[in-house]
Amino acid sequence: MTLHFFLKLNRPIQGEFPIVCRITNNRQKTEFQIPFLTCPENCWDKTSETALPYAPMQLEINRQVQYYKSTAAEIQYEYGKAGRQITINLLKNYLLGKQKTHWNLMDYANHYIAKREKTEGKRIGITHIAKTFEYVKAFLEQNGQKDIPLDHINKGWITDLHNFFKYYKIDSYGKKFALSTIHKHFSKIKTVLHDAVNNDVLVKNPFDGYRITKPKSTRIGLEPHELKALIELELPPYGELDNVRCAFIFCCFTGLRYGDSQNMLMSNIRLNKTNQRNELYFIQQKTSNVVETYHTVPLIKHAMSILDKYNTYYIRRYKGKLLPKLTNQHSNRVLKELAAMAEIEKELTFHISRHTIGVIGPFCGFSRDLSNAWIGHSQTQGDYTYSHVVVNALHQHAKKLEEYLDENVWKV
Image (cartoon, rainbow, N blue to C red; front, side, top):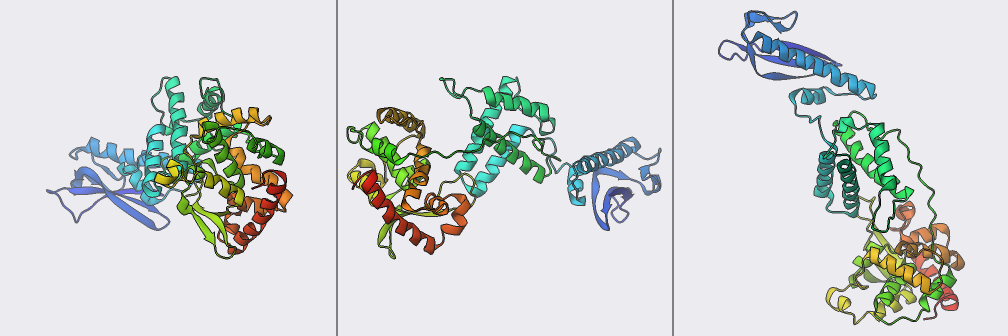
C-alpha cells in the first residue's frame, strides 16, 4: 500500500492548487484532499512530492505530508503485526480522523451497550453486560482511575482485574464470585473488545490468549423424595414461604427459568388440539439469543393445581400473572429456610427447580434430549421447539410424568 501526493491542477484556488493524497493497493485506489492547504504549481516538487523551499507555507505543507506518511506506516505496521489486512478506505478514514482510534474502555462499553439497545431493545443479556462494566468501573476507581485507553490494556492489567474479581465481596456477608461467574464476566468484557476489533478501533483483542479455567458445570436438581418432602411441608397458605414454595415447585414441573416464570401470563396458556392438553407457549428470556426464541412445554395436572390455587389472587385478577410477584435474591434466601425445614441438604436456589425435571425425567422414560427439549435448552432448541412431532412426544411423556408423580411424590 503506497501514498502519493500531487496537485489537483483542474481545481485552482486563487492561483494555487489543492494538494491531494492518493492511496493505492493492488490496483485499487482512493484519494482525498489535504484540508486547508494549497500550493502554486511552480512551488511543487513532483519527484519528492513536497513543497519547494520558497513555497508559501512550505513548512506546514511538508509537515502535513510527512505526518500522513508516518501515520500510514504506523497503522499498517500495527495491522500487519496482528496478522490483519487494512483496506484503503479504512486507512483513508484513519488519516482524515473519521475513524476514532483513541477510545477509552468505559466509553466504548457504553457506546456498545447503547448501540445494541437501539437495535435489540433492553434485553437481559445487554443488562448483564452493563452490570459487568459496573464492576470494571469499581476496579478502575479502586486504582484511582476514571477510565483507561483501550490500547493501554495489557496482560498485566487483565491479571489485576482477574484478582479484583476473585477477592471482590458481593454483599455484606462477604460472599465472593464463583470461578464460573468470573468466567462469564470476562467473556462479556472480551465480547465488547472483540466488537472494538471488528470496528477497527483496536487492532488486536488484549484478552486473546488470556485463559480462565472454566469449571465443569454440574446441574443439580431435586430427587423425588426431596421434592415430596418440600411439598408436604405444612405452611400457612398464601404466606411468603408458601408462595415461594409454589413458584419453585411449578418451575420444577415446567422447567421455567425464574425470569420466565415471573413474566408468565394466563394468555401464555393454550390448548394443544392434537393432545387436548394445556401447554405453555412463550418467548424464552435467554441472555445469548439476539432473535426471539419460542418454547412450548406441557402443563401437567400438578402444575395446573398450583395455578388453580391463585385463581382469585389479586395479581391474577388485575394483571393476569400466573404466579405471585417474587424477587430472585429474596426467594433464594427463603428457599434455604424451606430446605432446612424439609431436611434437604442441598443449597436450594431457584435455578435448581429448572433441572429437577432432568432428575425425575429418567424415571418416566425421558431421554436426555427429551429432558433438554422440556426445559428448552439451546442445544436442542433448533431441533425440538418448532417440531410438532417432538411437542407431541413431550405431551405423551407428560402423562407418564403425571403417573409417576401421583405414585411417588404428590397425588393430585
